[in-house]
Length: 331
Ligand code: GCU
Image (cartoon, rainbow, N blue to C red; front, side, top):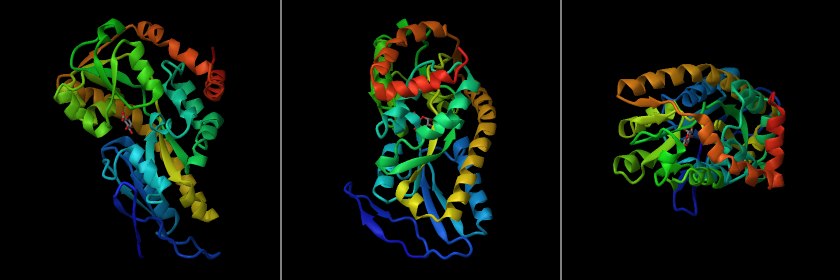
């Protein structure tokens, strides 16, 4: 199959994806979809995607293929989402925070202590509210077809943190979104918007004092080696999303769409099954290399961060999502 090349505004030359044969009524048409993401191949989201590739191949009798480019080789989520918009890539994965610049609704996941418990979180991301949210980027050229649990995010740093007061003046890396930047500022720290792939060096060289993420990312990225204190404040639960360009989606015929959606839904369940084990294994690995887990009074963090909710409720576009999510809780 031929592939053409396109030069993007950024100067990067990329192979154009989506090599499809013309549509006939009979069996599944041949298609190869390209998916790039920024996670390590050991990450459970990658494992779920790799399984999805197998499932798609099997269900289509080898006619549909998913080629995965892991580890940020096509750039971070911002870049890969732009590749989707430029028709230079079919699929990618972004966290809800990384979706926020494209659709403000996703900022709801950056609200601290939003979910009552894991059951509430799952009811949201796998239920009708989450499914509706997944279409919010449609006018930006892509939609989500799977949501992946990503646990909770906590701070980790080169020095111990026992309460918000200890964070005053610290430089903390965040995924750059207005909500996460505000979150760090409310704790009296300075937000440093550094790409995921550059955080290790920034920590090592002391450009930043800490960052925040779930345990698997803390360990897979080896940030644990250069920031030994993991603070169990669990401020947010930010899911990951599997994203496809609407152009690619619209070019698929009904049968291809069904094969892809079924495999995507199956990958959600598979990833969720793997997640908890991965968190436990990551904590063990972190402890083995000398990390210290610090228990903190989460109420102190919650109190310091409450003003974010006021900003949110004052913006009707965002407030509606908060209300929908709160309505699914039990309190
Ligand atoms: C999580 C997420 C990544 C994201 C990263 C980050 O680990 O799975 O996709 O890029 O957070 O903090 O940048």
